[in-house]
Structure formats: structure tokens, C-alpha cells
Image (cartoon, rainbow, N blue to C red; front, side, top):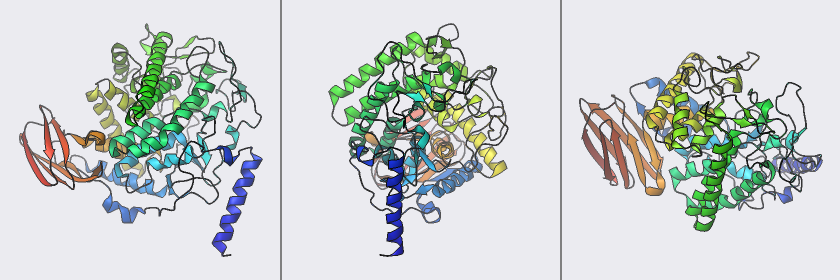
Length: 557
């Protein structure tokens, strides 16, 4: 027996012993996911892969290109192979936070990794969570990347009804807070996990974002059942008797709204998130040929959206709020309300009111948008304060997508460009990408105690310098299922991207403005439809394999 084999056996035995100690049985996990074993894949290295990645051209501001490449360099540091005996089944991108992989973080990370999906471990990073799913549908939000066991505090070792291990950040700092269900029976059997482990289901959204780049229906078929079971677990354990959904500190660690949620209060973010989840599953059901299931999920989404609008919208304050366990509105304005946009919960008029807040410097329209807490709230921390005012890349991604859903594209683009520029300026000052950012200065974020947040955080912070840069500054948005690419050209200087990848195509795109004429050159290895948009012109062209050139006689923005 060689040395490596011996170490592998030791790792397997150690992992099994740890699972036994923490009451986690491998045999009951991953039963809905059709990928049970790891097939070895060599991890890509940045130096040898850099020339194959999408190559942005943005003469208007070369700093954004520099930040783009720094972000990729950091991302490559956090690619991993499963450890022997861990039960993880795919190479993965790590959250860059600690020794654990995070379900929520990973879902957002896949969104920028989609831009190079054939070169890096992206959407398959979620496989490791599906492989650890319990038979009742639960998936822990945090798993040790070496052992493959769920983060120990999130295991319900006591076999109690649902409770929050670390509570609600209330003044008494209570731990192990039981959840009081009102108007419904306590679900049985007891969950495998605590409430801390069951925050924000965004994996289905991430899967569909990947689908828009790849049109991979095989992938949607693979993950559909695990996601349906995950949705059902949230319905079983997190749905309060009023039909809305429960959350705790884990949704927004130190937000001043958390004490309002103590013991069974319902969150606007988790409730709207379940609308999003149902709408995502409806779309996935349509893609995979399940029309009746699609109708059922869409009906559930519409019903929950109506309930949210009835109970959580405040007509006087023109905002959505969490509810206490006694169903009183918790009138603290947080980023959580904007989940009603991406989930298409808000009515057009309510969306208009939320968009107004994003432009209001007294609330969310700050120097670096969008803070997680409204600036006119007593607990707002202008230098960051984590979830008490910092700008987070994940929640900004949610806001941008939500604005697009309601047709506020110009506002989304303005927020995105200010956000991209602010992150690039902080990169210029510090040489790195940060976990979150201050809203009232061009600076990295700080914790409530004043200490800096994590640097080299790629991590979900990679979404902005890579994906949002390509989407909003360069202007490229793929629609792989329809074999279409939308290109909004706004720069007055040369702009484009070489080796842009979508739907199996490799494409070089370059726009060179001169006066009122833009010369557009496209080199591609496959045909697709290209929708070109400038300030006063929108034109659809059929791109053929090989060399294509067009001229648009129109001014740019």
C-alpha cells in the first residue's frame, strides 16, 4: 500500500467517525441527486487558463479591466477538489470565508463563473450540496469542505422541534431559541437542522442563470427533483401559520431587524424568496416537460405574492416590512424588501415606490449603492457595519435583477456602473476585492467593532467586477435557450469582448465608435442572433460562422 492510498483510507475513516459523532448518516443523504461519486478533474490554474478566459475591451476605463483580471486571479485561488472521504462529488469554487462551503455564497458565485463555464468549476459547485441533501429535503447552508459534514452547530443533535441555535441578535443574546408556530401544527418529524441552517433558497435561481448561458437542459433535469424536495422542506418547517416564512439572524447577521423576528416572526426576504423559488421551479418544470407541475408552482407563487402584499406592504410608508410572531409590522427599512422585485411579488406601483427609494439619498440612494439598511434608520453605520449599512455584492445582484424584471433598466444600469466604479477605485487603493463596502465613502466595509471585513474575497464579491462589468459596462447579455446575444453599446470608445462564451459559441466582439457611426466586428465559431442596441437604435442581425461586420449610423449614450 503506497503512502497516498494509506492517507486516503485514514481520511475516509476519519470522516465516517465524525459523521457518527455528530449524528449525520451518509446513507440518508443525496438520494434525489443522480451524481453520487467524484470523477477526478484537474483543477485549472490561472496562469495557463488566463488566455482562454473572456477578454474584455473597455478603453473608456482600463481600471475596470485591471480589476476584472485581479478578480479572476483571486477566484482561481479558491478552486478545490473534494477531499477523500468527504462525500463531495464535484470540483468547486469556495466561498473564501473559512473552512466551510456555503450554499448561499456558492449560488451567487456561480453567476460570474458562468462567463467561463467550460473552463472553471462553476455551477457544478452546487452538486456538493445536493449530494448532502437529507431525505426530507433539507440542505445545510454550511458544510465543512474537508470532512463533508454539516457545520456542527447547525445539526439538530437534540432532536427538538425547529429552533435557532444562535438566535435573533436580541438584546438578551438568547441561544437555542424555539420557534413558536401559530395557527398550524408543529411539523413532525423534527428537522435534521436548525433554523440557522435554512436561510434563503437561491439555488434554483442560480441554476436558471446558468441555463441562460448554456441552455443545458440535462443539467436542469438533474437538479429539478433535489430542488423540489428542498422547496418542500422549507414549506414543511419554515412556513408559519399565517402562510409566510420564518427566518433568523442567518439571513442578515447583525441587522437591527433581527429581534423583531424572535421565535417565529416572518421575514419579507425569505417569504419573497419562496415566491422566487416557486417561480423558478415553474420555469424549470416547463423546460423539462412538466406543464402541470409548472402550473402548480406558478399558482403557489401567485398566491404567496398576494399574501405578502396583503400583510407585509405598508401603504403609508410605501415599503415592505417583516412581521413579528404576533404579526405586527417591524418598520425598519432594510434591503430585504427588494426581494419582492426579483421574485415579481410587487405590483407595478409598489415596484415604482421601491425604485424611488433606490434613488433617494435619504434612504438607499447613497454614494455607493445599495446599503443593506436605510440611511435614515437609527442603526445605520455609514462606514459599513456589516448588515447595518454595508454594500454587499450578493444583495446588489438581487436588486439589479429585480429592477430589470420591472423594466427599470436605466436605473439598474446606473446603480451597476456606480457600484462597479466604486469597487474598482477601492481595488486601486488597496489592491484587492473585499467582502463588502461602505455606502457613504469609496472604501471597504467594516464590522460593527470597526475592524475591516475580509480582503481577497472572491467569493461572491467576484460577481460585480466580472459579471456586472460584462453585462452593464460592456453591455453583453446572453440568451442561450434562444441562441441570442443582446449587446447594448453605450461607450464612446472602443468596447467589446474577445472569447466571449455562451451556448457553446466562442465569439469575438468589438465596437469602434467614430462620430455617429459604430463599426461592429464579430468573429464566431457558430451562428446566432445578435440584438444590437444603442441610444436611438435597436437592430437584430443574423450572425454567421466566421467574420461579420456591421455599421450603425447612430449616436451612442
